[in-house]
Image (cartoon, rainbow, N blue to C red):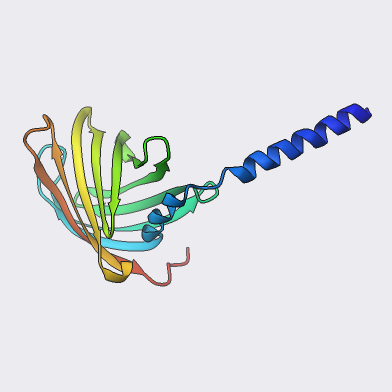
Amino acid sequence: MHRIRVLLVVLVACFATTVQAQKPDPEVKKLHAYLGHWTYEGKAKPGPGCLGGKFTGEKTCQMILGGSFLQCRFTEKEPDGEFRGFSIAGYDPVNKNFTSDGYAEGGIRGSNILSISGNKWTYAGRWVSEGKQYQYKGTFTFAPGLEGGTFTDELSLDGKTWTTCEESKYTKVKPPPKK
């Protein structure tokens, strides 16, 4: 019985040391610019993969899993109704880049490489909607003070012909609404 207790103490000590050693990479702090509650409004142009029309939305972003990842949840009101989804962004220390994966109602999913340079976040990747795969690129540019920003994105079926899908303006809300 004594051996089992000693073994358990050693295992717990090893596990605690391992967990402590796995702190988020310092690069993750760049994701903190998006923390908080945001409102946005914009217009989508009709085209392949893009419904078209005016929309409004709310997005709340927080750090999760010990501060290693940024999770954002959104609710958007579009011409054909309400639309919800979420994304998770993190830093990949092996490839020295950020990744962002998103999921939304209707089985929409996307995966991007995220480049952060100053106040500009650039996304490039692929997403799937209604059984079609699109190449995707988008840019979020933070306003001075990180209290707002603008977003634009483009889609392509072939990687050669790109169509602007969405242009929107974001505002950080202080304090976040209580739910």
